[in-house]
Length: 204
Length: 204
Image (cartoon, rainbow over all chains, first blue to last red; front, side, top):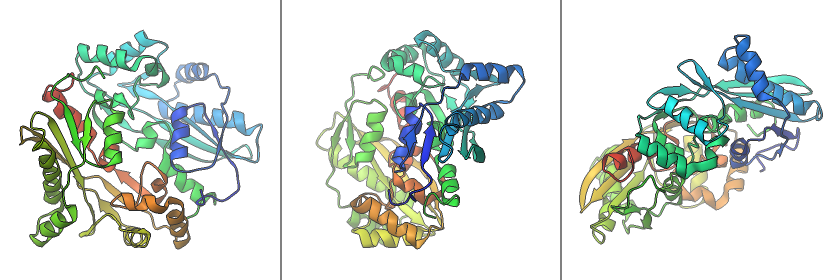
């Protein structure tokens, strides 16, 4: 899109289809590189060291970006990470349908937050970061609803940390949703665009 | 989707592709019927009679639903309408690119609201309504940005009342966005799903 200067090249350091869709929706030209970061191990260490969820999300976003920036120092590398916290308990992406169902039961009728970090690196240095904190409240749905929802969504449930796709049938789960839609999908977009304008990547 | 009971049939009384996409995203089964309502004339009358924007949006949503309900009294008919108000001035869908550009110049650097009404009729009677009021603030973009944006979006600018598609490159226009994403797209979804659950159309 002509709203974008030709340099620097943008690289999204993420294997997330929804983050990619957020940037594509905004008409940005970028490439995607999947960073080899052992997220589960980083989360375990972070939790063991008492790192707060916000700091953990920022650390993971930076680690992913660093992994890619190392082999592409000229690019502006965008890393991102999202956690789910409900009443002090952290949730990880469910491994299977049974775990997804258990997560949804634990989140039912309660508010949770999605600390969502985005970090930009250039020449291996962090040049910008942002942390969004969308808040969502699941309604007190029935067990019958949950059975139907799990059956309808199937394997898609294991692709997100909350076992929901808000842009799809996940909307049926919620009583209330606050925060930037793109941040809920995994990438705070308006703050990122503002940084890219200030950095000369986009027209002001 | 199995989250939905078989009756009543849902009909979306709207020719809006984005409203249709909102309901499809939520996995609902519904048909679409484009209501023949002279919206410009209704808006002129409403303004002449001093009707507030909220009431005008509700009136238009109901008129659209009534037009369809008349020929399909068994269905649950969903009507919707969205207005744009900036500092007391109402904006209509731009007729061409020049008008779209003028709208964007008038909205630049200012907050505006999108009174967004949804009305449900059954058997010709209004059984539910809801009004959302998303608020968006356009940033003080440059003339060079505006030229590039208008060139990039082209005819798509004339398809929405604000000359932007927030789910697309329109994100570049904004400093701040608050309100339900689906409501900004033209159809408040979470309140509608809640009504459909209470009305027995969806699993609770």
